[in-house]
Image (tube, rainbow, N blue to C red; front, side, top):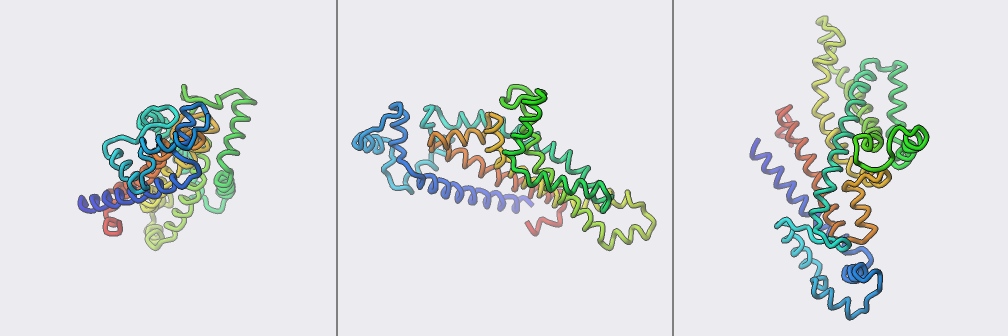
Length: 312
């Protein structure tokens, strides 16, 4: 198992290296010159002449071939240096460290809320399949999956903040500020989880061992929770992990709309300001979150169900 974990770690590192190369290359294909944009920010928007741009580009190493620039950036990264922000002049690592904690807390709140919504509803829909509640919750889950986050965020802000005045619509200083962004993210995730849990339970309940248990006289509720539910947990855990990684996508929109100072809003600010080192760092952190979350989920599944070790 340890050797398999080491192989997975090596594969994750190689994947992250490839993603960093792709991200670095795509970033340098964006329109605009690094040196010119940086000089303009330092000169209050004044367009520098070509000679000044050339001298500054040479002093900062921007005139080097792209592979050389990448190797320099990678070498600095291995020493814990993500570069310096073009706009603030501060180390990028400091901005990332401050913002990522807020994004992680919001992701955890959203995932817990989504599971608290999806698990009981998914179990109820499967146990009472075909009933009125089943049809109602399935319809609501489809609606929750279909509503775009930005539109849902605006509706919640209009209702709970502007109309009722119950919750703040922006900021992060109190726990109440996290309620609306948490609900927006959790709603779309819970819709996916409800439908998956319901379909998985119904599929598992049709297996031969369930019919055998019923023939032996075991109660339906006991079979459902003692035998059927444990068999869908590994796949459900995998889906939950994928949705947890997907949360970081939705955060770009949600954090911007609710002025939540996390990693998503930081990325938007960096894109608007053409702050290339900060954009690259945000991209690297988000890519790392996908890889690390999937790696952690795979490891947890191998502990829960040793039968999947050979597959992973």
